[in-house]
Amino acid sequence: AANKAWSGRFNEPVSELVKRYTASVTFDKRMAEVDIQGSLAHAAMLNKSGVLSDDDLAAIRGGMADILADIRAGTLEWSIDLEDVHMNVERRLTDKIGDAGKRLHTGRSRNDQVATDIRLYLRGATDAIVGLVHELQRSLVDLAEQHAATVMPGFTHLQVAQPVTFGHHMLAYVEMLGRDAERFIDARKRINRLPLGSAALAGTTYPIDREYTAQLLGFDSVTQNSLDAVSDRDFAIEFTAAAALTMTHLSRLSEELIIWMSPRFGFIDIADRFCTGSSIMPQKKNPDVPELVRGKTGRVNGHLVALLTLMKSQPLAYNKDNQEDKEPLFDTVDTLSDTLRIYADMMRGITVKPEAMERAVKQGFATATDLADYLVKKGLPFRDAHEAVALAVRYAEEKRRDLSELQLVELQSFSPLIDADVVNVLTPEGSLAARDHVGGTAPNQVRAQIARWRGLLAA
Ligand code: ARG
Image (tube, rainbow, N blue to C red):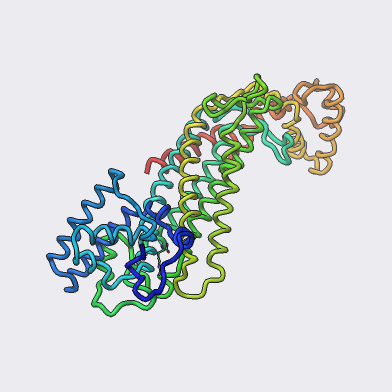
């Protein structure tokens, strides 16, 4: 069947392949509810402006209510003959109410309609994602609280560096996620502007009231240039960039969970419900969920590049290329939402193994910097202190002991400045407690950050 919405000037119908190739309803039907919401606001505006009669408006409202009910019940049949969600809904409306349905599209184009729909959809998705980011932050803060003073090795180059607390390490991710939430909240400002009224590209000859439509739909403002408004997808790219960065943060945490769960480290265990076994090796318990998060990050990063590439060569204004924005965008929303949900649950199911972490701290001479700092405070220049401690580490390594396990006389052979008070700086606990300033790993600083985040996340 020919598409009656535009087939008037055509001599032959499109082939089945072209129809399938150009149709978007299979995926853009996800925007059906916001499409109806936008149409109802548009119709109310047309009525207020004297373009649409009271009777027509009432008929449109009645018809749309029925269609919405059908969509929610899953009984509305989508047709690729009608190309996209917009024409499916409009045709269904016209089937139900006749001419009033055909008047709905007055002063509007699918170009400003689709731009409006994506923004409405993405506004809702953004709000939901901010909520999910906060939920994950809460779960990490809870974990940090249980382990505000749990010693673990901090790493650089994946080599043991200095002691930190597990709580401090978890809060590092709470900070990253905090910036992620900020980015989504900021992107929302540019999402929440109304393009409707731009029509196909140049605006419309009808006496429209865009501010009124914006108010009905909860937009903060109206877009100021019709050419830009129908062709702008910056807001979708910004959203996807924020999503890619959030996934990147979770991918880093995933990498750490995978390493920590390896028996070589044995720092944590992940609850069975997030792992799977092997069909050949009976002993295996694999951290599938973190591995998939790491993998899916590549997919979301790919969507970001896809959207940037989609836009880079488009002349103004609307081009059909834009229809390709939806699948990457929707998949970004789905992937990130699922990842955030699964992560909040998974982090609540982590078992921390403090003995293994403490052992690693000692094997790695994690308090060597503390010993150097101790010597500096006793008057030795830092470079000399570094050298003295390096020799002590070499000695301890040969003896297979930690610095804290050396006798005082042994330590004194590397510097006469070393006294009995050195014991406080060589233990992991002493090392942690000494880093007592904003941003430091001292347990009381970690607790202060937990209190700060609890306040921010409650607001
Ligand atoms: N399905 C289209 C999209 O997603 C709607 C706009 C189509 N406009 C047009 N003139 N073909 O972008």
